[in-house]
Amino acid sequence: MKKIVLQDRFIVSAKVGPKGQITIPAIARQMFDIKEGDTLMVMGDKKRGIALLKDDLFYQLMGGVMPDVGDQNDKTDENL
Image 1 (spheres, helix red, strand yellow):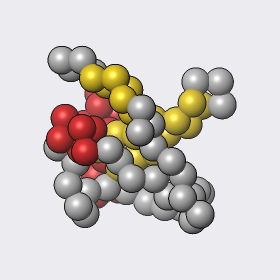
Image 2 (image 1 turned 120 degrees about the vertical axis):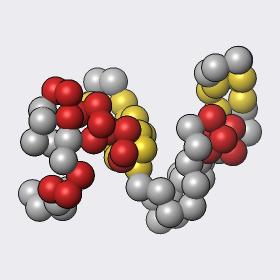
Image 3 (image 1 turned 60 degrees about the horizontal axis):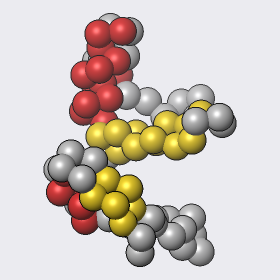
Image 4 (image 1 turned 180 degrees about the vertical axis):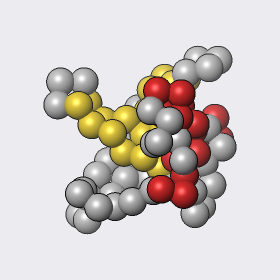
């Protein structure tokens, strides 16, 4: 596994398994306090790539931009 680690950022490789799954490297789980059972938002932009964000932070950030999205009680999988 290739890895570049600085004080507050890193670059690490992760291989995609046969079911399309990846393991989030330990350094990322530690830095972002990701624990078993946490929900991550997967965001994609064809030109910029893929990003992962813990769902609580996503809804907190979106609440400032789109107040209705900031209400975690309204989470839905419809239209996905």
